[in-house]
Image (cartoon, helix red, strand yellow):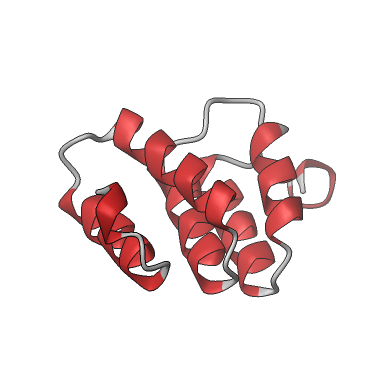
Length: 96
């Protein structure tokens, strides 16, 4: 990207890449991309990853993504709603 277009990827571009990989069902590759980022990922990256984990049923990755988002933005109500939906879909109301 830098060589072809002279654009340095930022959080939003990485978030888009994670989203595209996640929509394609490549959740492991999306996680590898997150881990290889040259900066600390924010909710723009973890949010799409969480959505991909929910859509493709990756329970351990869902928990990881949720906790990372909650660490970044503990007052973000949407993350709690997503977490509740995940637990409800898994039939784990007792874990709440």
